[in-house]
Length: 359
Image 1 (cartoon, rainbow, N blue to C red):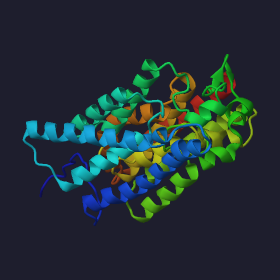
Image 2 (cartoon, helix red, strand yellow):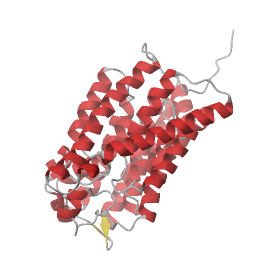
Image 3 (tube, rainbow, N blue to C red):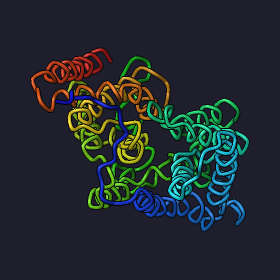
């Protein structure tokens, strides 16, 4: 009898070809890009806040990203003497779209070029992709580079937002050792519904929660997404922020705000469900989502970084193989996964109570 051998992924369980799966993502992200252009190009242009040339900036950013990443990808593959497949070309377009949709509108072109090069090089190495998503690495480089190299305090504000919200800075959850409330977090931008619609400052295509929710349902229908990770991640953030909000005497709006802001929904749907750098076993996916949510809350409250969700994805991807091993063992011995679930639940409650009572 052959011994049971646990092999590392990635494994994609689908009757569809990889190219078809990539095309489904391409259509979905294309809709988000049209929203990004409407919000950051057409609307400011119609309100006389930018020129025709500036209105086309999202297309220019996408073109630059795809051209640079394609040249770099082909060059790297040639150096490695690797064959190039059709699905890899489609994947490059998808990756370019994701990168652009997460960009701050004030990104310098040379920073974007550098990020595109890094992304394309990492895409050529399967062993690296298993432990980290090249898009996450490149977008973090681009965002941090933009923050350091530009003098604009609000790098996510388009021309219309700069004119109408110029005195408002992107809010922090904690100010002078106190949790910030509705007047600072929501009121400057309207109401909670504005965050759901997407007419608030943020990454180019990551602000419309309604549109992202529709895309999520479409991807679930097409069986092209690890929906367990998405729902577990959002559930974790909602539960933890509910504890924090109740202990701080905030209303129902507080956990909702946590889900609707900071690109959490975009990350939950697009980046946290990557086929290669995330678990494939059912238990592994749930543990991943729980850990991702805990890390996001920690980064949001204890660091000054607006990119808490992205940093969480980067760190959790290093645990991909470990979580899948736990999930594989739990398939036959579920009781062995219980200590991991209990530990994460204790962490969730402990961290939430600490934040809610300390600030």
